[in-house]
Amino acid sequence: MKPSPERVLLVLLASVQFTHVVDFMIMMPLGPQLMDLWNLDTSEFSRLVWMYTATAGVAGLAAAPFVDRYDRRRVLLWFYGGFVLATLGCAIARTPGGLLMARALCGIAGGIAGGAVMTIAADLVPPERRGAAMGFLGTSFSAAAAVGVPFGLYLAQKFEWEAPFFVLAGLSLLNWILLARFLPPVRGHLTSGSWPGFERFLTLLRDSNARRGLLFMGTLVFGHFAIIPLLAPHLVGDLKLPRDLVPAVYAVGGILSAVSGPLIGRWSDRYGKVRVFRLLVWTACAVTLAIALSPALPTWAILAIGGSYFVFGSGRFVPGQAIQSMAVQPRDRGAYMSLNGCVRDLAGGLSSALGGWMVTRADDGSLRHFDRLGWMAVAAGLLTLWLVRRVRMVEGSR
Image: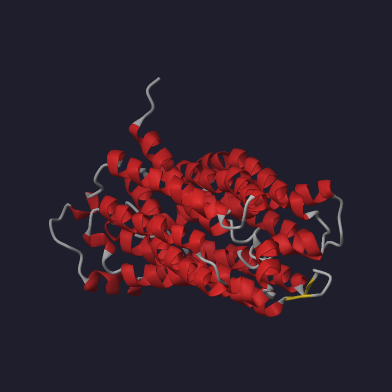
């Protein structure tokens, strides 16, 4: 049977998200290797992680008033092209400062490109199938964890740490060519014939429901990234996972979430996005505490807990992002999703920075005060249970 145009489009967009996510995720499991290579402490390494999200957030804020003026296709091609060049810059960096600068450029270009991907998907998929679409796009995160990150770590261990970035730049270039060839123009938001002005952007900022939606997503991301940047050093230093098995945690988690993500999307469409979101948050909080408070564990237990965190921790973003996408009318979605990306990135950057400040690394490789990150993540997760009830899904209403 011939695949539908909607499915083909989602596959193309998911391939872009795959490279974007791998580019961000690969830094975190490279932590032990880079910390040893350049004698970095936890604060210095966390800076390499949060620089990506911080610059992506600033870029999203700067772009928000203008992105609704243009064809979504053009926005995506321009900034994804910049992402390709910035990823190549990571591969040729030879100092922590050079890598930090390249990560900043990746954040600027990748953050806006990632927001454009979500905007295009929300523009072209109707609300009644939006949860399933977000679940399908979420498989890019799963594939990044199951295939991209373990393969990248294999390349880093087999050759040098920069090898994954060379491969990722080449794959991203291929995706850019496919986008230029097959992605149609996306101009439905320009049907009025006039360009949205800065006044509409200010009106959006004054929309209390939009502000609640942004606060909801920022809190969700803050809690998720409380433990993510230092997860690999914690597994190795505290839970005593052999370093060569770190890729297995990401592979198991990615495979499980690749199966669960589309199911979560369909369930959220069928049973209610808020109801499914609340169930996932409660479970994710329990798994987070299990990771943060556990002593040394056998490998099978670490794989089980890590896989559960991928399923429930990442899975809550499927209904969460669907709810977020319907908080404004389609004509304002480009600006709103750019602001959404800005808030997500700034929240992730702030969470990563706090983690680097709160946690220190002992001489034996263990991390002091990692448990505090777990409690911080749970507190943010519980706050999202209240915030999600405050966000009205207004798309299609007058």
